Length: 260
Image (cartoon, rainbow, N blue to C red; front, side, top):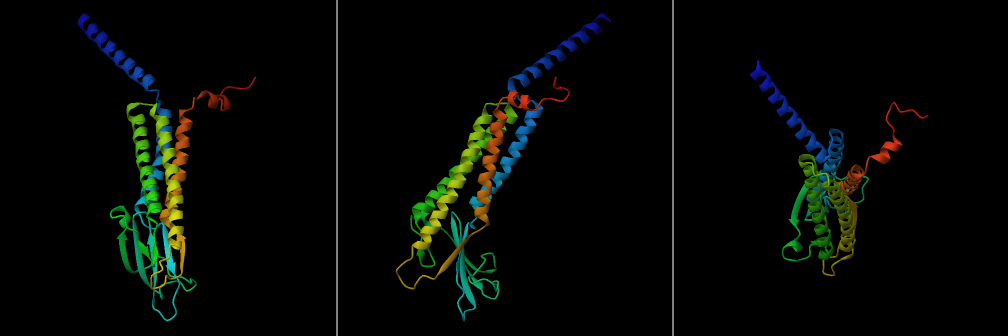
């Protein structure tokens, strides 16, 4: 009986010590289950923005360039480009909607010729419909977009460290990274818009004459705008989680407390 009581007491002491260690670890990390759930929801929102950002930067449907239909011709030409690649297409005019004066949209089936921009390798400008790109502006847009993706990856790493290691001080760092990545993506979109204007104005004097063009921004650029806004919203959510809880507790009192 004495030995059995001794073993029971030892077992109870070990359980109490393990409970104290777990409680100490939770207090040290400061990340309660409720707070952890909020961080996961904000991370889910940021993950949506990150997915849209990768989709936008990796695709070449930022802008569509369309020539006007030519009478007596069965085909017309269109092009779509992004940060890295340009695709020119020859479309059948019978497939083009009758209410359009220009060729397109670029998603229609046709003979496509896609090439990567050479200003990333040899430094040469690209020629699209007898017009020349301005490589400095295109390079700036691409570099800013890549920097945005890198900063976004750092923000994801910080939030993962918060959830797995309890390093709650990285929550503010992750918020800054997500906010900065959203701003960089939006700046990249604006720089790309200037590159499109420079392309339209860069008409080559060499024959044949440059055809008239119209342009319209496409779904890749829309994904970039949505990604930048969602990342900024996610950064705001993370910053709100770093604020102390007492201002919110005074504004939203718990149930059961009645005003006297």
